[in-house]
Length: 330
Image 1 (cartoon, rainbow, N blue to C red):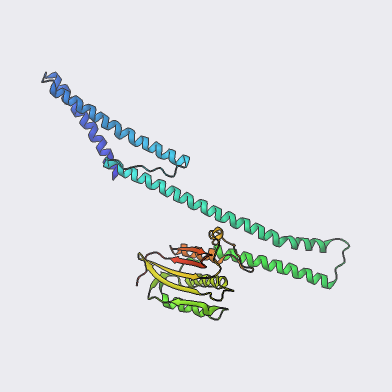
Image 2 (image 1 turned 120 degrees about the vertical axis):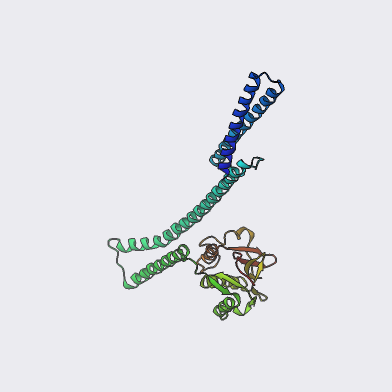
């Protein structure tokens, strides 16, 4: 609609300039008072100036717009003018720049994400395959005699390495093949109770304290239980060795946005590692897979929400927050 208005205004100015020119010519030929032709001449000059601005200004802005995209200028914004017909075009140009860089940032983030996965996969596969190749070369060496016990030990190493590689690839498959959430209304007390039942018999499970709230979420109950189980198990690991260690899980609504919080007073996460914990296959546990938090964040993104983390090791406070779209209610 803005372009149609702009085109109509442009045509109106052209017609007005032509009419003013014709009127001035008639006044001059009729030898009327020179004041009227002078006024008409000024009007024509004004209309020509307006036409020049209407044509040149959008052209300049479009060239600036294209230059900003080509040169990667992210901060460029086109201010609104007094010309209502141009405002719509400038608004759309601003929206295009914003969308362009949002998509570009998303692509760059995904590239870094998959580059990291590729590097980790290459590293893990190489480390797993190397001893298998070494052993097989040793067994195939001409003139080498292998007794039964030596062969059994070698095959055990090959079997262990193969199982480790399979476990790693299974974790990668889980991370990259998340099913779409099966959304439905979830009553939070019911979700918390079911999660508590899963973890109550684990070591130090009695340290998990739940604060109930009569809130309903619209989410996938199976995936939510998976996230909460991951967070609570990590918290149990964090408070290990602390006699006063305790974990709290509660929910609420802030500015109409539902949230679930899991907090603990364990060892905490150093500031330099807080951004790494959501990276795939990053773990500080001896037997951890490093996909729990990455998987949990991916699930929250599929729900249109977010998983955030804050930690202060000095004060022994670590908080994970699940933010949901503002669709829940009391």
